Length: 177
Image (cartoon, rainbow, N blue to C red; front, side, top):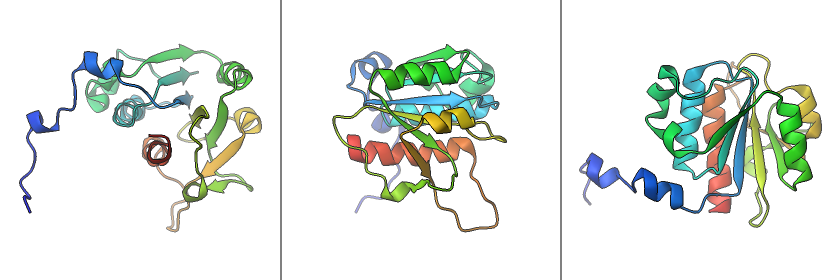
């Protein structure tokens, strides 16, 4: 068994141009007032890895180009399609009307443990992630079709928003790819 680490050439899957031509998952991410540019960059990087169709940056969520986003995105802000919307509620309402299934990553009384959630091929999904302190706006939670929660068993009751997004995006990827 070869345990030698791969070099950068071996790790390169495709060029930026080739990436843009790849078929993306029927999955968009809405960042609802995510204040940290580093978290936004990390969401870009994970979205690139898991073929997310688009990131919708809402409210105070930072937008490229920005040096802090670039530091964690490592170029993914150039590959993943994105746009900014001032009002997340209006953006989500429009997507819901277009048939997108709205999934909120949040802790609620009736949330579904992430490991029990099975995205269905043929459906289109919107994953909403929220502010580092306040979480996802309650109005967006109310619009959702499903609220997903990552079970946690330690002293802390939450994970960093970009860490949570990464875990959730992997769950979508393994079922939709």
